[in-house]
Length: 463
Image (cartoon, rainbow, N blue to C red; front, side):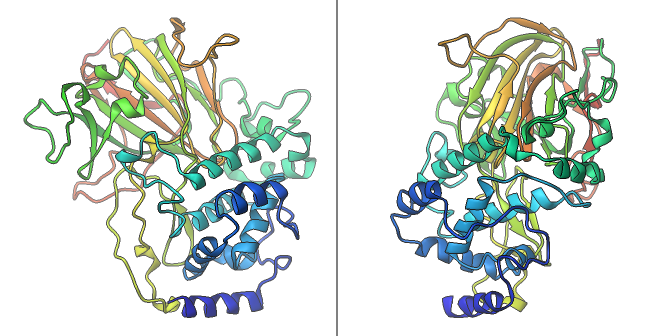
Protein backbone atom coordinates (compact mmCIF):
# COMPACT_ATOMS: atom_id res chain seq x y z
CA UNK A 1 0.00 0.00 0.00
CA UNK A 2 2.60 2.53 1.06
CA UNK A 3 4.67 2.01 -2.09
CA UNK A 4 1.90 3.41 -4.30
CA UNK A 5 1.23 6.33 -1.95
CA UNK A 6 4.91 7.20 -1.76
CA UNK A 7 5.15 7.15 -5.55
CA UNK A 8 2.29 9.63 -5.62
CA UNK A 9 4.07 11.76 -3.03
CA UNK A 10 7.29 11.73 -5.05
CA UNK A 11 5.39 13.06 -8.08
CA UNK A 12 4.09 15.94 -5.96
CA UNK A 13 7.53 16.66 -4.55
CA UNK A 14 8.91 16.86 -8.06
CA UNK A 15 6.41 19.53 -9.05
CA UNK A 16 5.75 21.44 -5.82
CA UNK A 17 8.07 23.56 -3.73
CA UNK A 18 7.26 25.39 -0.56
CA UNK A 19 7.91 28.74 -2.20
CA UNK A 20 6.16 27.98 -5.50
CA UNK A 21 2.48 27.79 -4.65
CA UNK A 22 -0.33 27.97 -7.20
CA UNK A 23 -2.52 29.46 -4.46
CA UNK A 24 -1.17 32.27 -2.30
CA UNK A 25 0.81 31.10 0.69
CA UNK A 26 -1.15 32.14 3.79
CA UNK A 27 2.02 32.89 5.76
CA UNK A 28 5.78 32.56 5.58
CA UNK A 29 6.90 28.93 5.76
CA UNK A 30 10.10 28.72 7.84
CA UNK A 31 13.02 26.48 6.95
CA UNK A 32 13.38 25.02 10.45
CA UNK A 33 10.82 23.55 12.83
CA UNK A 34 9.79 25.91 15.63
CA UNK A 35 11.42 24.89 18.95
CA UNK A 36 8.05 24.76 20.72
CA UNK A 37 6.66 22.35 18.11
CA UNK A 38 9.84 20.28 18.21
CA UNK A 39 9.60 19.86 21.98
CA UNK A 40 5.82 19.65 22.48
CA UNK A 41 4.89 17.56 19.42
CA UNK A 42 7.90 15.79 17.95
CA UNK A 43 9.48 14.84 21.27
CA UNK A 44 6.56 14.73 23.72
CA UNK A 45 3.83 13.22 21.49
CA UNK A 46 5.79 11.25 18.87
CA UNK A 47 8.87 10.56 21.05
CA UNK A 48 11.10 11.49 18.13
CA UNK A 49 9.48 8.96 15.75
CA UNK A 50 7.74 10.77 12.88
CA UNK A 51 6.53 7.61 11.14
CA UNK A 52 2.90 8.03 12.34
CA UNK A 53 2.83 11.62 11.05
CA UNK A 54 4.44 10.53 7.77
CA UNK A 55 1.77 7.85 7.36
CA UNK A 56 -0.98 10.41 7.99
CA UNK A 57 0.46 12.73 5.33
CA UNK A 58 0.83 9.82 2.91
CA UNK A 59 -2.82 8.90 3.42
CA UNK A 60 -3.91 12.51 2.95
CA UNK A 61 -1.98 12.79 -0.32
CA UNK A 62 -4.12 10.23 -2.13
CA UNK A 63 -7.08 12.63 -2.02
CA UNK A 64 -5.31 14.97 -4.47
CA UNK A 65 -6.17 18.00 -2.35
CA UNK A 66 -4.75 20.97 -4.30
CA UNK A 67 -3.51 22.85 -1.24
CA UNK A 68 -1.20 19.97 -0.27
CA UNK A 69 0.51 20.43 -3.61
CA UNK A 70 0.35 24.21 -3.69
CA UNK A 71 1.75 24.62 -0.18
CA UNK A 72 4.28 21.82 -0.45
CA UNK A 73 3.03 19.56 2.34
CA UNK A 74 4.39 16.25 1.13
CA UNK A 75 5.82 14.63 4.25
CA UNK A 76 5.96 14.95 8.03
CA UNK A 77 8.81 17.48 8.00
CA UNK A 78 6.96 19.84 5.67
CA UNK A 79 3.81 19.56 7.76
CA UNK A 80 5.85 20.55 10.82
CA UNK A 81 7.20 23.56 8.93
CA UNK A 82 3.66 24.51 7.92
CA UNK A 83 2.50 24.26 11.55
CA UNK A 84 5.52 26.33 12.60
CA UNK A 85 4.43 29.08 10.23
CA UNK A 86 0.91 29.03 11.69
CA UNK A 87 2.29 30.04 15.09
CA UNK A 88 3.10 33.51 13.72
CA UNK A 89 0.29 33.82 11.20
CA UNK A 90 -1.03 37.26 10.32
CA UNK A 91 -4.24 36.23 8.51
CA UNK A 92 -5.31 37.85 5.28
CA UNK A 93 -7.93 36.87 2.72
CA UNK A 94 -8.60 36.41 -0.97
CA UNK A 95 -11.71 37.55 -2.82
CA UNK A 96 -13.54 34.24 -2.31
CA UNK A 97 -13.09 34.50 1.47
CA UNK A 98 -11.72 30.96 1.63
CA UNK A 99 -8.01 31.31 2.44
CA UNK A 100 -8.39 31.08 6.24
CA UNK A 101 -10.87 28.24 5.74
CA UNK A 102 -8.34 26.32 3.62
CA UNK A 103 -5.58 26.75 6.19
CA UNK A 104 -7.73 25.36 9.00
CA UNK A 105 -9.06 22.54 6.84
CA UNK A 106 -5.62 21.48 5.65
CA UNK A 107 -4.07 21.47 9.11
CA UNK A 108 -6.85 19.32 10.56
CA UNK A 109 -7.16 17.15 7.43
CA UNK A 110 -3.67 15.82 8.13
CA UNK A 111 -4.34 15.26 11.83
CA UNK A 112 -7.67 13.53 11.06
CA UNK A 113 -5.86 10.73 9.19
CA UNK A 114 -4.97 7.35 10.61
CA UNK A 115 -3.08 6.48 12.72
CA UNK A 116 -3.23 9.97 14.31
CA UNK A 117 -7.02 9.85 14.63
CA UNK A 118 -6.80 6.69 16.75
CA UNK A 119 -5.52 5.72 20.17
CA UNK A 120 -2.89 6.16 21.56
CA UNK A 121 -2.82 9.60 19.88
CA UNK A 122 -6.46 10.78 19.90
CA UNK A 123 -9.72 9.80 21.55
CA UNK A 124 -12.58 8.60 19.33
CA UNK A 125 -15.51 10.99 19.00
CA UNK A 126 -18.00 8.89 20.95
CA UNK A 127 -19.78 9.11 24.31
CA UNK A 128 -17.20 6.97 26.10
CA UNK A 129 -14.61 9.68 25.41
CA UNK A 130 -16.29 12.29 27.61
CA UNK A 131 -13.69 13.57 30.07
CA UNK A 132 -10.79 11.85 28.31
CA UNK A 133 -7.88 13.42 26.47
CA UNK A 134 -4.87 11.78 24.82
CA UNK A 135 -1.48 13.32 23.93
CA UNK A 136 -2.33 14.57 20.43
CA UNK A 137 -5.69 15.94 21.64
CA UNK A 138 -3.85 17.87 24.33
CA UNK A 139 -1.25 19.16 21.89
CA UNK A 140 -3.91 20.36 19.42
CA UNK A 141 -5.60 22.31 22.23
CA UNK A 142 -2.31 23.88 23.32
CA UNK A 143 -1.44 24.68 19.70
CA UNK A 144 -4.80 26.45 19.29
CA UNK A 145 -4.10 28.50 22.41
CA UNK A 146 -0.62 29.34 21.12
CA UNK A 147 -1.95 30.56 17.78
CA UNK A 148 -4.68 32.51 19.58
CA UNK A 149 -2.13 34.24 21.79
CA UNK A 150 -0.31 35.54 18.73
CA UNK A 151 -3.62 36.84 17.35
CA UNK A 152 -3.60 39.24 20.31
CA UNK A 153 -0.21 40.63 19.25
CA UNK A 154 0.23 43.73 17.05
CA UNK A 155 2.15 41.61 14.53
CA UNK A 156 -1.02 39.65 13.74
CA UNK A 157 -2.54 42.51 11.70
CA UNK A 158 -1.49 44.98 9.01
CA UNK A 159 -3.12 47.59 6.81
CA UNK A 160 -2.71 45.27 3.82
CA UNK A 161 -4.43 42.42 5.68
CA UNK A 162 -7.34 44.67 6.68
CA UNK A 163 -7.67 45.77 3.06
CA UNK A 164 -7.87 42.11 2.00
CA UNK A 165 -10.86 41.55 4.29
CA UNK A 166 -12.49 44.73 3.00
CA UNK A 167 -12.14 43.33 -0.53
CA UNK A 168 -13.66 39.93 0.39
CA UNK A 169 -17.48 40.25 0.12
CA UNK A 170 -18.30 37.35 2.47
CA UNK A 171 -16.81 39.26 5.42
CA UNK A 172 -19.29 42.13 5.00
CA UNK A 173 -16.71 44.59 6.28
CA UNK A 174 -19.12 47.44 5.57
CA UNK A 175 -21.21 46.26 8.54
CA UNK A 176 -18.32 46.51 10.99
CA UNK A 177 -17.96 49.26 13.54
CA UNK A 178 -14.38 50.49 13.20
CA UNK A 179 -13.17 52.04 16.48
CA UNK A 180 -11.14 55.27 16.38
CA UNK A 181 -7.92 53.34 17.04
CA UNK A 182 -8.73 50.87 14.26
CA UNK A 183 -8.02 47.17 14.77
CA UNK A 184 -4.71 46.84 16.64
CA UNK A 185 -4.71 43.00 16.53
CA UNK A 186 -6.32 40.32 14.40
CA UNK A 187 -8.57 39.18 17.24
CA UNK A 188 -10.00 42.71 17.47
CA UNK A 189 -10.88 42.51 13.78
CA UNK A 190 -12.20 38.96 14.02
CA UNK A 191 -14.43 39.68 17.04
CA UNK A 192 -15.48 43.04 15.58
CA UNK A 193 -18.61 44.81 16.71
CA UNK A 194 -21.22 45.81 14.16
CA UNK A 195 -22.68 49.22 13.47
CA UNK A 196 -25.81 50.02 15.42
CA UNK A 197 -28.93 48.59 13.81
CA UNK A 198 -27.17 45.90 11.77
CA UNK A 199 -28.94 43.06 13.62
CA UNK A 200 -32.50 44.06 14.60
CA UNK A 201 -34.14 41.69 17.07
CA UNK A 202 -37.44 40.16 15.93
CA UNK A 203 -40.38 40.58 18.34
CA UNK A 204 -38.17 41.78 21.21
CA UNK A 205 -41.04 41.81 23.73
CA UNK A 206 -42.69 38.53 22.68
CA UNK A 207 -41.38 35.61 24.75
CA UNK A 208 -42.99 33.08 22.41
CA UNK A 209 -40.49 33.96 19.64
CA UNK A 210 -36.94 32.62 19.95
CA UNK A 211 -34.32 34.32 17.78
CA UNK A 212 -31.00 33.20 16.35
CA UNK A 213 -28.17 33.86 18.82
CA UNK A 214 -25.51 34.03 16.11
CA UNK A 215 -24.96 34.64 12.42
CA UNK A 216 -25.00 30.96 11.53
CA UNK A 217 -26.15 28.21 9.20
CA UNK A 218 -28.89 25.97 10.55
CA UNK A 219 -27.90 22.30 10.70
CA UNK A 220 -30.83 20.67 12.45
CA UNK A 221 -32.92 20.10 15.55
CA UNK A 222 -33.44 16.82 17.37
CA UNK A 223 -35.72 15.67 20.20
CA UNK A 224 -34.13 14.90 23.55
CA UNK A 225 -35.37 11.43 24.43
CA UNK A 226 -36.96 10.56 27.72
CA UNK A 227 -36.32 6.87 28.29
CA UNK A 228 -39.44 6.65 30.43
CA UNK A 229 -41.46 7.48 27.31
CA UNK A 230 -42.44 4.29 25.43
CA UNK A 231 -42.41 6.21 22.14
CA UNK A 232 -38.73 7.11 22.23
CA UNK A 233 -36.41 5.93 19.43
CA UNK A 234 -34.98 2.41 19.81
CA UNK A 235 -31.51 1.54 21.07
CA UNK A 236 -31.34 4.31 23.63
CA UNK A 237 -28.85 3.31 26.34
CA UNK A 238 -29.76 4.17 29.95
CA UNK A 239 -27.49 3.72 32.95
CA UNK A 240 -29.99 4.67 35.68
CA UNK A 241 -32.94 6.94 36.34
CA UNK A 242 -30.76 10.00 36.88
CA UNK A 243 -28.98 9.44 33.57
CA UNK A 244 -31.94 9.26 31.24
CA UNK A 245 -31.60 12.36 29.06
CA UNK A 246 -30.00 11.66 25.72
CA UNK A 247 -29.89 13.01 22.23
CA UNK A 248 -30.07 9.86 20.09
CA UNK A 249 -27.99 10.21 16.95
CA UNK A 250 -28.32 7.19 14.68
CA UNK A 251 -28.50 4.97 17.78
CA UNK A 252 -25.54 6.70 19.43
CA UNK A 253 -26.60 8.31 22.68
CA UNK A 254 -25.04 11.53 23.87
CA UNK A 255 -26.10 12.62 27.34
CA UNK A 256 -27.29 16.16 27.94
CA UNK A 257 -25.65 16.07 31.36
CA UNK A 258 -22.30 15.64 29.56
CA UNK A 259 -23.02 18.51 27.19
CA UNK A 260 -23.92 20.73 30.16
CA UNK A 261 -21.03 19.35 32.26
CA UNK A 262 -23.17 18.14 35.13
CA UNK A 263 -25.07 21.42 35.40
CA UNK A 264 -27.67 21.25 38.13
CA UNK A 265 -30.18 22.34 35.49
CA UNK A 266 -29.54 19.39 33.14
CA UNK A 267 -32.51 17.34 34.47
CA UNK A 268 -34.91 20.04 33.27
CA UNK A 269 -34.30 19.19 29.61
CA UNK A 270 -35.80 15.66 29.57
CA UNK A 271 -38.02 15.40 26.49
CA UNK A 272 -36.94 18.80 25.22
CA UNK A 273 -35.17 19.82 22.04
CA UNK A 274 -31.57 20.19 20.85
CA UNK A 275 -30.73 22.65 18.03
CA UNK A 276 -27.40 23.08 16.24
CA UNK A 277 -26.05 25.74 13.86
CA UNK A 278 -22.52 26.60 12.75
CA UNK A 279 -20.50 29.72 12.03
CA UNK A 280 -17.86 30.11 9.35
CA UNK A 281 -14.64 32.15 9.58
CA UNK A 282 -16.32 35.02 7.70
CA UNK A 283 -19.25 35.39 10.09
CA UNK A 284 -19.90 37.94 12.82
CA UNK A 285 -18.59 36.13 15.89
CA UNK A 286 -20.50 37.67 18.79
CA UNK A 287 -23.39 35.72 20.28
CA UNK A 288 -26.60 37.17 21.66
CA UNK A 289 -29.38 35.95 23.94
CA UNK A 290 -32.06 34.05 21.97
CA UNK A 291 -34.58 34.82 24.73
CA UNK A 292 -34.88 37.26 27.58
CA UNK A 293 -34.96 36.26 31.21
CA UNK A 294 -32.73 35.58 34.18
CA UNK A 295 -29.21 34.20 33.73
CA UNK A 296 -29.06 31.30 36.17
CA UNK A 297 -25.71 29.71 35.37
CA UNK A 298 -22.59 30.56 33.37
CA UNK A 299 -19.80 28.06 32.83
CA UNK A 300 -16.73 27.59 30.67
CA UNK A 301 -16.16 23.92 29.91
CA UNK A 302 -12.69 22.88 28.81
CA UNK A 303 -12.42 20.13 26.22
CA UNK A 304 -11.01 19.32 22.81
CA UNK A 305 -10.12 21.65 19.92
CA UNK A 306 -11.40 19.19 17.33
CA UNK A 307 -12.29 19.80 13.69
CA UNK A 308 -13.28 17.01 11.32
CA UNK A 309 -12.52 17.53 7.64
CA UNK A 310 -13.44 15.39 4.64
CA UNK A 311 -12.35 15.49 1.01
CA UNK A 312 -14.90 15.55 -1.78
CA UNK A 313 -14.47 13.68 -5.04
CA UNK A 314 -12.92 16.77 -6.59
CA UNK A 315 -10.31 16.89 -3.83
CA UNK A 316 -11.97 19.93 -2.24
CA UNK A 317 -11.78 19.96 1.55
CA UNK A 318 -14.93 20.54 3.54
CA UNK A 319 -15.61 20.81 7.26
CA UNK A 320 -17.86 18.02 8.48
CA UNK A 321 -19.96 19.38 11.33
CA UNK A 322 -23.07 17.25 11.06
CA UNK A 323 -24.36 15.80 14.29
CA UNK A 324 -25.51 12.52 12.79
CA UNK A 325 -22.97 10.05 11.33
CA UNK A 326 -22.95 9.33 7.63
CA UNK A 327 -22.11 5.80 6.56
CA UNK A 328 -19.16 5.77 4.20
CA UNK A 329 -17.62 2.95 2.22
CA UNK A 330 -14.12 1.99 3.18
CA UNK A 331 -11.83 1.72 0.16
CA UNK A 332 -8.72 -0.40 0.28
CA UNK A 333 -7.26 0.30 -3.15
CA UNK A 334 -4.66 3.02 -3.53
CA UNK A 335 -4.91 3.75 -7.24
CA UNK A 336 -5.48 7.44 -6.58
CA UNK A 337 -7.28 8.42 -9.84
CA UNK A 338 -9.97 5.78 -9.19
CA UNK A 339 -10.72 6.62 -5.59
CA UNK A 340 -14.17 8.04 -4.88
CA UNK A 341 -13.30 10.66 -2.29
CA UNK A 342 -16.93 11.59 -1.76
CA UNK A 343 -16.96 8.28 0.11
CA UNK A 344 -13.84 8.96 2.16
CA UNK A 345 -14.08 7.11 5.44
CA UNK A 346 -14.75 9.44 8.37
CA UNK A 347 -15.63 7.30 11.39
CA UNK A 348 -15.19 9.90 14.13
CA UNK A 349 -17.71 12.53 13.09
CA UNK A 350 -20.49 12.07 15.62
CA UNK A 351 -21.35 14.41 18.46
CA UNK A 352 -18.07 16.27 18.84
CA UNK A 353 -20.03 19.17 20.37
CA UNK A 354 -20.26 17.15 23.59
CA UNK A 355 -16.45 16.97 23.85
CA UNK A 356 -15.35 20.41 22.67
CA UNK A 357 -14.28 23.47 24.61
CA UNK A 358 -17.52 25.41 25.09
CA UNK A 359 -19.39 28.01 27.03
CA UNK A 360 -22.69 27.51 28.80
CA UNK A 361 -25.30 30.15 29.61
CA UNK A 362 -28.58 28.96 31.17
CA UNK A 363 -31.41 31.50 30.87
CA UNK A 364 -34.75 31.15 32.65
CA UNK A 365 -37.58 32.60 30.55
CA UNK A 366 -41.00 33.09 32.18
CA UNK A 367 -42.85 31.46 29.25
CA UNK A 368 -40.40 28.91 27.83
CA UNK A 369 -38.62 27.77 30.94
CA UNK A 370 -34.90 27.17 30.92
CA UNK A 371 -32.89 27.62 27.72
CA UNK A 372 -29.25 26.51 27.56
CA UNK A 373 -27.04 28.40 25.11
CA UNK A 374 -23.71 26.78 24.25
CA UNK A 375 -21.17 28.63 22.09
CA UNK A 376 -18.84 25.82 21.03
CA UNK A 377 -15.22 26.35 20.06
CA UNK A 378 -13.76 24.63 17.03
CA UNK A 379 -10.18 24.32 15.84
CA UNK A 380 -8.35 27.60 16.49
CA UNK A 381 -11.56 29.05 17.95
CA UNK A 382 -11.22 27.32 21.28
CA UNK A 383 -11.32 30.65 23.13
CA UNK A 384 -14.91 31.26 24.22
CA UNK A 385 -15.21 34.65 25.93
CA UNK A 386 -18.30 34.99 28.13
CA UNK A 387 -19.80 38.30 29.26
CA UNK A 388 -19.94 37.06 32.87
CA UNK A 389 -16.65 36.16 34.55
CA UNK A 390 -15.89 34.76 38.01
CA UNK A 391 -14.71 37.16 40.71
CA UNK A 392 -10.96 37.29 41.33
CA UNK A 393 -9.76 34.01 42.79
CA UNK A 394 -12.94 32.13 41.83
CA UNK A 395 -13.70 29.67 39.03
CA UNK A 396 -16.63 28.78 36.79
CA UNK A 397 -19.46 27.89 37.09
CA UNK A 398 -21.01 31.05 38.44
CA UNK A 399 -24.64 31.96 39.11
CA UNK A 400 -25.14 35.63 38.17
CA UNK A 401 -28.92 35.88 38.69
CA UNK A 402 -28.73 38.68 36.10
CA UNK A 403 -31.65 39.94 34.02
CA UNK A 404 -31.07 40.18 30.27
CA UNK A 405 -33.16 41.12 27.28
CA UNK A 406 -33.54 39.15 24.09
CA UNK A 407 -30.63 40.16 21.84
CA UNK A 408 -28.21 41.19 24.60
CA UNK A 409 -24.64 40.03 23.99
CA UNK A 410 -23.63 36.94 25.97
CA UNK A 411 -20.30 35.82 24.46
CA UNK A 412 -17.86 36.00 21.58
CA UNK A 413 -15.26 33.84 19.86
CA UNK A 414 -11.76 34.78 18.82
CA UNK A 415 -10.49 33.50 15.46
CA UNK A 416 -11.75 30.78 13.13
CA UNK A 417 -15.09 28.98 12.87
CA UNK A 418 -17.39 27.78 15.59
CA UNK A 419 -20.77 26.30 16.49
CA UNK A 420 -23.80 27.28 18.52
CA UNK A 421 -26.11 24.85 20.29
CA UNK A 422 -29.42 25.60 22.02
CA UNK A 423 -31.23 23.24 24.38
CA UNK A 424 -34.88 23.77 25.29
CA UNK A 425 -37.19 22.30 27.90
CA UNK A 426 -40.12 20.17 26.81
CA UNK A 427 -42.57 22.76 28.16
CA UNK A 428 -41.21 25.35 25.70
CA UNK A 429 -43.32 23.58 23.04
CA UNK A 430 -41.06 25.11 20.41
CA UNK A 431 -41.61 24.80 16.66
CA UNK A 432 -38.38 25.40 14.75
CA UNK A 433 -38.96 27.58 11.69
CA UNK A 434 -37.30 27.46 8.29
CA UNK A 435 -35.02 24.60 7.32
CA UNK A 436 -35.72 21.35 9.11
CA UNK A 437 -32.80 19.30 7.82
CA UNK A 438 -34.78 17.10 5.39
CA UNK A 439 -37.17 17.56 2.50
CA UNK A 440 -40.50 15.78 2.02
CA UNK A 441 -38.63 12.69 0.77
CA UNK A 442 -36.42 12.52 3.83
CA UNK A 443 -33.35 13.73 1.95
CA UNK A 444 -30.91 16.22 3.41
CA UNK A 445 -31.53 19.79 2.27
CA UNK A 446 -29.18 22.70 1.79
CA UNK A 447 -29.15 24.55 5.08
CA UNK A 448 -30.06 28.20 5.28
CA UNK A 449 -28.00 31.07 6.65
CA UNK A 450 -29.58 33.20 9.37
CA UNK A 451 -28.49 36.37 11.15
CA UNK A 452 -28.62 37.35 14.81
CA UNK A 453 -32.16 38.35 15.75
CA UNK A 454 -33.98 36.48 12.98
CA UNK A 455 -36.79 34.19 14.18
CA UNK A 456 -35.58 30.69 15.02
CA UNK A 457 -38.76 29.21 16.45
CA UNK A 458 -42.16 29.95 17.94
CA UNK A 459 -43.73 28.41 21.03
CA UNK A 460 -47.18 26.89 20.77
CA UNK A 461 -47.96 28.55 24.11
CA UNK A 462 -48.21 32.05 22.66
CA UNK A 463 -47.37 35.03 24.84
